[in-house]
Image (tube, rainbow, N blue to C red; front, top):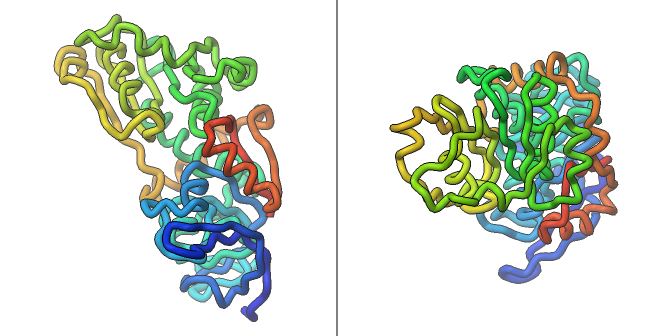
Length: 331
């Protein structure tokens, strides 16, 4: 493929720990090695992208850099013939947008092993309304299902329900027939959460009432937790006998201040969710489900669409804790 110039959101390190952001021009020749060149149609903004854009060394160490851990578009070139030019594909996870130039540019180049064919039933735009957040939420729901949690067993809690993963988890669980209780620190989002399918919305502080006790009253048949920390500890203490809790985030804290009683007295299962290195077989299965039996038709209530020009403001909103739902980036 001949080098082409394209627009990208570029983060630069002007001096040690001093970072600036701009929309600039790049060429395909600037991109890292890989078998597949993709012309990006849509990306999405995730908290990890906001960290990358502000120079967080735990996410990105190489600059200049283009963040964007999600990308969906059409194949421009594929050197190993695993994909055809013009084929619609998506990429989430792996190193995309971390130290590999990501979806906030109009082109990416990645290994073919990272690329998922867009499943029938999803448009490029729909796939990025979901993005890593939707993929992570769907992995969480799949683990609950595979661990035997059924709708008739009782309420399923979703923490951080107004965020990207949480809001999609609410919608997916409701779509699958579960009664969902959405916990959030943003009461103003209650109307949106109920449109997504939540039967009930509670303030996150309610989860911590009585959490100083070794165990709490059994309340949840299962839970999708994005918070970690004291929130996850309280959720475990209030999960019913034989219940399952999935853990996919650390919005609250990376620490888990709990005891073993939920596990040895109630048989509660705590299952970890990793969307970054998830193998390709379950990755494709999840995207197939999202395009078919788990396809959502109500995500427009929780999505805000921007162009590259809107990224700076959206990143600041996310870092200040004022974001809710999903932010779709149109390339």
